[in-house]
Length: 74
Figure 1: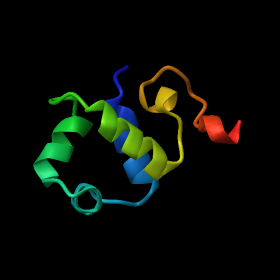
Figure 2 (figure 1 turned 90 degrees about the vertical axis):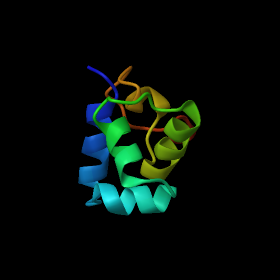
Figure 3 (figure 1 turned 60 degrees about the vertical axis):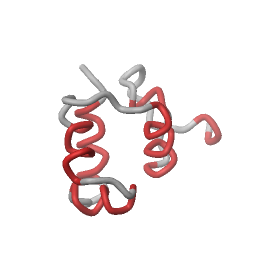
């Protein structure tokens, strides 16, 4: 499984629309949508930003673990 379904799940669990999250991230809606659908690779710096925003680990976003706990909370 790629990372992009996790991006959608995290966004939906936070009750955010793609438009609202794109506004928060200061990017175009279509750009973010392309990350979330796997049409475009997620830049590492954006992955870090999203991990901090959602309070999850990069390993969770990357699909390496199902544990959402960020390293500073372990």
